[in-house]
Image (tube, rainbow, N blue to C red):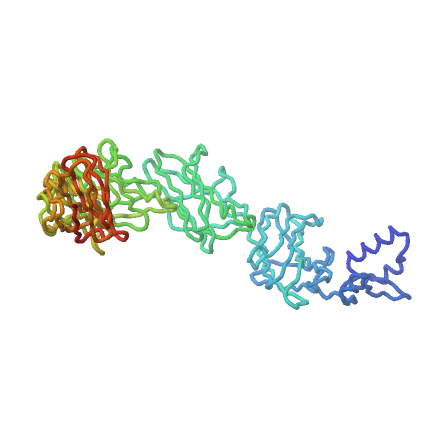
Length: 628
């Protein structure tokens, strides 16, 4: 009979003043019921189901003697440290059957660390418990946690003596199973290999990689080393089996100098702390593992660690300590000793010249910036910069990436003189743009090349660019423009200047450093676009014209008399005629058809023909009209 059934029977008897006698209890002592409770009828012990269990169809029967390991401390099975796992079995671990408990006894020595790894079958849920000699709970855990198939428990013995480790079934052990097998790997690790306090830290000297061990999830190992003034020291830690190190570097006063908390994205990769010692002195490193993990207490294992003396920093960390470059277009090799390091180099440059920094380095090491003597940045995203005196090249880990502190090592770079800017950056320095193709290059990501366009009156031109964006400045010309370019061309405009003159086209980068401009003369405009150059038409005569380009406007002059009615016919549809009175007021607009209007005053009127852009109007094409 289980202890739970026995206690329940005694409690019920006490409450009702009746029930089993001491003889009945003795008869039920050896009975283990699959369900229900043990009761004595006619001198025989049987397992009886409750009304609820009967309705549920549960079978209540005696399971017989328990062949399993001891369920109590008094009957605990001895457990010895071994490299081979101990195999145990939980009986009756499913459904409503009474939970099984397996208890093991082991001898422990004060100050020694012991590990238990209990491997479970799929679907098993167990409770593992560690107790001292009096049966007092020391620690416990419920497993599995998420998908971990192993129940892990570490124990630092506070005193020499006997301790107990138990495994208890908590739920169904597997589909249709009655017994469930588990395996316990019990190891005695000995004493903690490195102290847990900074004051007792293990002394280190720079040398090859060594191996350490965190015996407990709460364990921390402290190391110390003596630093030489001006030298760079780097401490590296890695867990080969996964997880990550959390490191903290402090000086002799306990002030934190550097830290690396690690991230789950870097599990299994090294963590680092480093210092460039400003003077001779002592430093200490604290090492922990997997802070923030779901089962932090039971995260332990071996790790690799290394202390490196990298010597003095090879290059200055400020412009004042910059190393002069031996020359242009020469590869220079240097080293980033730690994630917080930065190397400065000085180079003499000529005004008007463009320079570019080329860097060869692993990962995110080659972040580059060029500064002038005042510290103001001069380089762009392409690592190019304009010359003009002393410039300082700064190379460091990429501060825009999450792992910049882990970027260090050798890099190679050179500064190349690209020569003067190929085209001016302003109308004052603009180069004349000839008809046909003109190739250019943007030396800087913020570069702009400006070109001068000499335009004849009443002529159409088209300017397009492959690899750049265009903008137009009217300059001395009165421009009429419209976007006009074909597929495959980055940007373009159709343009005309009513009176001729000089306009300016500005090219700016668009996805490429090289570009090609194309300027084309599309021929004359058949009708002037402004009143100053327009010609008179005769009333009653048919006028024909063509809108050659989007945005084209054909302008005519006509004399009208105040109070006189006139009829304007215009076709085809989609073209418009607008009359402007002598005073400049636009007072009448006609579409296709034959509208009639009366002149408000006598004088010279301006008649303009135009069209809207497609798809709602033709935009271009031939038209005709008659004003009578």
